Image 1: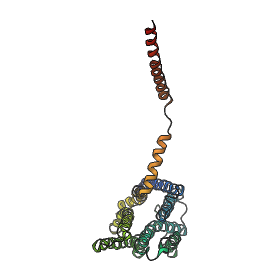
Image 2: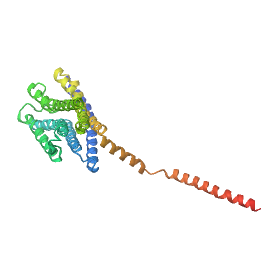
Image 3: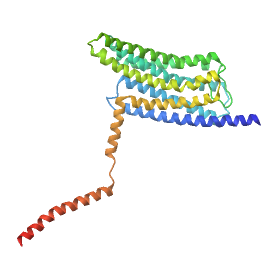
Image 4: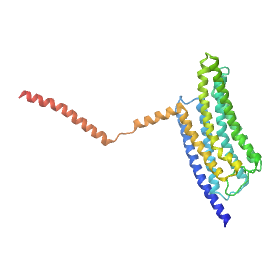
Length: 326
């Protein structure tokens, strides 16, 4: 009797948390699709390498949202599927989509490094072809990184639980946190520090090259935005990191929500931090307001008042002329 009550409470908690997480994932997916449509339709203003990499991150976010919702559906609606192999593949795709998001920010930082440091000497590094190559490398990397989820037997089916690496498996858990979070985050921070150092050096040496002073300031600002967006994911992972050391289930449940919430918040911040994209949305909203039809009753009333005023202007001079004629 006690075990049944514990199981029901466990599922009830999961249902609340997964519902919130799925709602955040749906919101993030909708915003990501909106950004993709805007960038695709606005030509040529948003057709830049920076927005190309932004679209890559949006695609990664959409895949993450789809996989998360798919795992929640399996947890609640298909409890009869108890195969360890299916569980391992669900874990693989979950880790795969997490990696696609984090490493997409890394190639954005690498792009800023190419543009700010190597663009003068190596013009080919700032072309679309090079950035397509970066995207291909990123996707091959994130396909390989989560392979331990299906190669090893560390992940197996557990009743009423999502398919993740068990916390008791220290080696695999440590590998996951290092490869999925630590490496891309530290790399982005190192690139940011390097470009920031170059800007400081340019100011001290008072170089006359506008590209080195004004251009790198712009690159530093864009890279700072990348760090801000990356920090959102880092903050969202704090509850899960604390869960590793405390094994407190509440922290684990909070972490499930914050991960999906971070994707939605990051997409909103992407719009707010990107000047061109923000201007495009603002113009679309202003145009929509102008196109909105007026109330017919209000228009008719104004027309009648205007017509009465015209009649008064015409009739008054006629009355004066009649009086004078008499």
